[in-house]
Image (cartoon, rainbow, N blue to C red):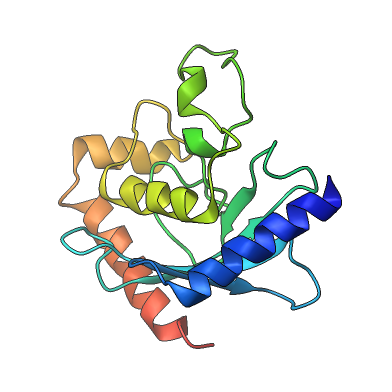
Length: 169
């Protein structure tokens, strides 16, 4: 599967370079490793994240696309569906099949038809509309529910400013 997965990833990267998608950019962390990508998510307009540049690493398994990649923000981000260590927790990145906790339908989880583009569109959508019913960051989810325009907004604004300061490092 390694040969097929690397060919598929090279094709997806080439397509994204030729036809960029609004909201993010993507490239390799190291030109010799097709399985690790750096992506920059541009904070979506009309959200608290607007103006931010959030770097993340997508790490693909050797059996991609049968299994999903892992995504971890390198830039600090305060969000209910991003763990404090930066790991992104959304359905599309969960292993295929039944959810043992019963929160997700199988069709909401990873499917081999997903691409880097569909993953990133889901992540951008997540920034605008968090799932606070199944949070990776319980504190952020509580603040989002109880005081979205207060402490939550302040923490996000701090992350946005920090992301702008470090965007070109």
